[in-house]
Amino acid sequence: MRRKKSNLGVTLLLLIVLAVVGGVVYLANSPMFERNKPVIEAPSAMFWNLRNPIVVTLKDDTGIKSYKVVLNDGKSSFEVANVILESPQKEVKVEIRLPRAGWNRRTANATMQIEARDASDWNMFKGNRATKVTQISIDAIRPRVNVLANSYKITQGGSALVVFGASDANLKEVGIHTSFGKVFKAEPFYKEGYYAALIAWPVTVKKFRAWVEAKDLADNVTKAHVPLYVERYRYRRSNITLKDRFLEGKVADLASQFDETANVADPVERFKIINEDIRKKNEDLIHKHSTNVSDRLIRRWGVKPFYPLKNAKKVASFGDHRFYYYKGKLVSESYHLGLDLASVKMADVRASNPGRVVFAGYNGIYGNMPLIDHGLGLYTLYGHCSTLYVTEGDDVRRNETIAKTGKTGMALGDHLHFGVLVQGIEVRPVEWMDAHWIRDNISNVFNVARKMIDRRDR
Image (cartoon, rainbow, N blue to C red; front, side):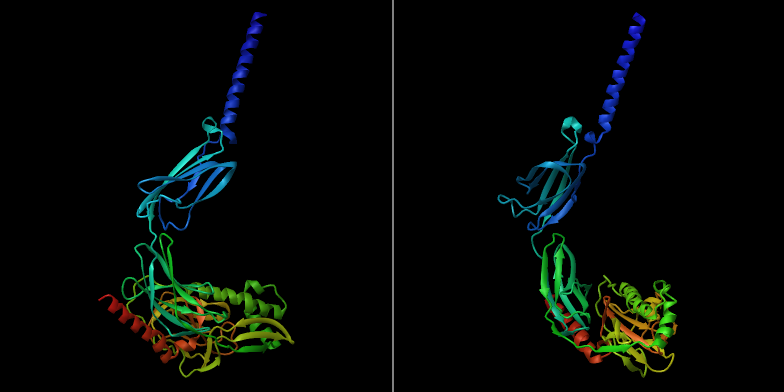
């Protein structure tokens, strides 16, 4: 009997020990006792303009329970936040602002110390603790910006040139912003601290305004209005009746090339898809390849008038707003964003100015199409070609034959679709074909700007 009682006691003791150990293991691995420190998303070093709040993000799986933030200006410490949350949150955004009083505004350097605790029961129910120190460089001075020279006016659908100066010890970015949301990249020009940019007013946008904007590493921003005279332009509206011959011929041939129209039997619906969806896809490719602007300093830049097709006749204008009807019903619309020129069949297409080929191949409704980068964000494209003599990456010379005209893509007759783009925006080719316009709006603006820069730097 004693042996049985003894064995029973040992068994019970072993069970108790196992239960305790199991409970400890369970608790140690349970979410209540997780041991991961909170994550503090803040840079190790940063610039601060003292005006905008510093935003710090705290994260933790069990939830942030409390946090504290201390700023130090080199002489004094300021507790700007000490918060205990009523209920733990997995993500907390903290806005840190300048202390209301006592801060040394002459200091150029400061530190920010952040401490966060989570809701875990680890560490004797105190939770996991994380700290981070950020070194802060104080910069409350805005960049200096001034417009030196610009084209007198910009026409809806047209281009203009702007030359400006921008300086700051911690300059981060400069560009020309517009009222329709596009930011035009500026290229360093002539001497350090000066920039030039071609800008454009899309044909589909009714109002236009532009300003130079410079931002430094502390997010100080300076804006300077570009004093352009803006001229609205009334582009032609064309009502086009779709013929069955066109729908069953050219459109049917094109439809067989695209996945989007592979199973579409209705000829009108096929046309609508090609004219809208395929067109957008093709224009997206053009825009993708025509937005690059170099970061290298340019001292001089200029172009001669573009004259890609000898003895050519204009057969369609830039900016036409085309409305397509079938049996009296409006079925689709689009804008014609180039100038159509025709001479003889398979005529030579020439590059009027040197540049680099950034695309050369088949592009849907544009057919065989070279696209050339002439620098400063200016690009030209040549659509519907029958033969291409250039490939992507080629450097072309002035007057070099790059292709022959044709009727590839959505073209009924042999002609050239000539397009001009400024940083991905289609603009009026007639401006860039006009020697007087180039002289007044490009060459003279550069000359004035160079003289002003030279006088400033004496």
